[in-house]
Amino acid sequence: MKYDLAIIGAGILGMAHAYHAAQAGQKVIVLEKDTIPQGSSIQNFGQIVPSGLGSNWFEFGQKSVEIYQKIQEKYDLTVRQNGTVYIASNHDEEQLANELYQYYTNIGYPAELLSRRECFFKYPMINAQYSKAGLYFPTELSVEPNQLIYRLIRYYKDQLKGEIQTSTTALACNSKADHVEISTSKNQIIKAKKVLICCGYTFNILYPNLLANSGLVVCKLQMLQTIPQKFIKMSGNILTGLSIRRYEAFAEMPSYQKMSTPWRYSELQKWGIHILFKQALDGSIIIGDSHEYATVADSHNLGFQINETINDLIIAEARRISDISQLKIARKWYGTYSQHPSDIFINDPTPNIRICTGIGGKGMTSSLGFALQHLTTWL
Ligand SMILES: Cc1cc2nc3c(=O)[nH]c(=O)nc-3n(C[C@H](O)[C@H](O)[C@H](O)COP(=O)(O)OP(=O)(O)OC[C@H]3O[C@@H](n4cnc5c(N)ncnc54)[C@H](O)[C@@H]3O)c2cc1C
Image 1: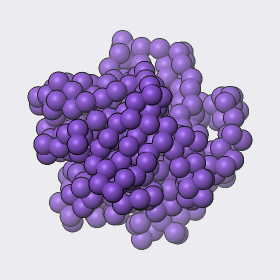
Image 2: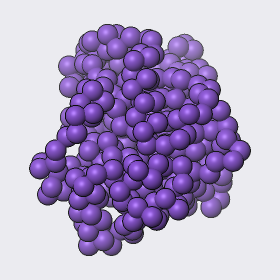
Image 3: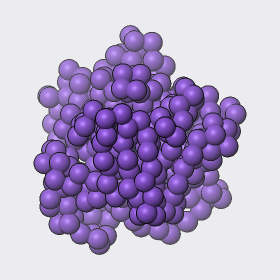
């Protein structure tokens, strides 16, 4: 057999599995339908933020940070260790920040509480009236999403001698007794002992009926990016009050249920808006985002347009938080990811074919750590 493992989809989830399998000496091939991958793994923020994950996924995030750094020492993946801050804007958010600080300190995960004054000096672009306190995680990372996956593919090919075929759609998988035959859009039959399908939010090619009835949902997120800024320095991942109200880690804290919601948040929360900032390597600042959901069957209802009402709400709230939002916007886009109620969707249509998708909004943060553990139990 030519390949031990064929992976369908060269997003972060597929490439994380390809990296670990090739590293373990398996003969691996990745098939990617696009000429260069363009899915969620390119459309995102590039924030590697284990601190926001629920406790059941936190270790995957922590492990991913370790692996990103290990690769970065040998090969530039654009990984920067510049930390994450959550800026609390009122008493309730500050209370949750304090509780999460206590939780992480107890388990030995580096965390610092920042006073309003410290927030001001460390993040001068955040309006002093907005920030009441900050919760800072110094070990967390950011990456350039428009470069990371391409560099990871190059590392996998050049250093680990892994194979990849782009512009190649896997059209069908036929399971035999001891292998799988994959038919591709290039009229090939590729044989591998096992196949892993990491198809992101592409549901209409392989196993469409199974995926349509899987409980998977599709999420559409709107994003904005300013023109490059020479004189503004915003280090790391900056998350704000609505993120504290949204992220799983905070939702597990004792005071979460008692939180009151200021009236101004209701319209923002209706669109799943929370405000995050991240400065890219060219100096531009990425601002987001919103969340609209649909089932697989209804995903077309999310539409192909940018909803300017949502962007106006994002900009108005970003303006309340920071002066950055006065800057000229260079780009607007929406991204998409797939998500499953049980954190990730894993299903085996046959014993040697596995579907693994629906990692949701945590894929950049946790895929490398998750894939390591997943492969040890599956391969
Ligand atoms: C706007 C936005 C912001 C985000 N911000 C963050 C963040 O800051 N931090 C974080 O941790 N996560 C973030 N996420 C989530 C993260 O991007 C996703 O969890 C992750 O990228 C999902 O990776 P994936 O490999 O499952 O999917 P994808 O990246 O979509 O990859 C799937 C790949 O499979 C290929 N494919 C599908 N079917 C076939 C087929 N039949 N044959 C061949 N190829 C096929 C597709 O072409 C695609 O390249 C964000 C997501 C979005 C959209």
